[in-house]
Amino acid sequence: MAVRKRFLGVIASLVAVLGPAGAGAMSIVREAGQAPLVIAYADESGRAQRLEPDGSALTVLHFWASWCIPCLKELPVLDAMADEWKGKGVRVIALSMDGDDMDTAAQFFKDRGIRNLTLNIDSNNEAMRLLHVHALPATIFLNAGGEEVARADGPVKWREEAARAFIAPYLRTAR
Image 1 (tube, one colour):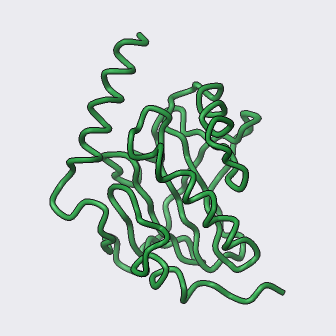
Image 2 (cartoon, one colour; image 1 turned 60 degrees about the vertical axis):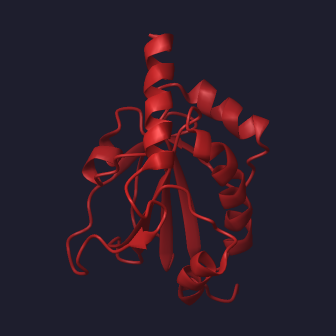
Image 3 (cartoon, one colour; image 1 turned 90 degrees about the vertical axis):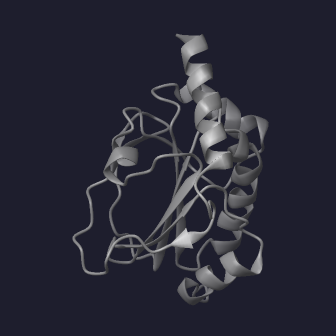
């Protein structure tokens, strides 16, 4: 089982790195006004959670896994950005695709000093299927009403101007 999981992880990482032309570019894939999907996942304690509006102007729903090579570099940067966005209307939900292996995902966070993201897991890949995520990492951007406004297939260069320009209109001054 471990060999199969590692093999699938290598394949998924290759797909994420090599991906389709333009991988990593943001694209709008759902029309505005479509009903939001019900996304369920578990938190670090194993409690069921649902992705619901919380007053944030933008939700960054990030799919990752401990075996995903591009995730090794991207997740710590996203963690730093989550700290920068704290209290400014942008929330980040990082969903691990490590199956039901919360220990591996938790060790990944610990080894990389991830402190601003909460550990969540999509143990049956239901969110991934519902949102048509085919490779990791992937990020889906949801507006305040839970509607998808954009997505990035592949790693995002969070500190670069294009990503900052996309996020900027959603940021608000902390109160």
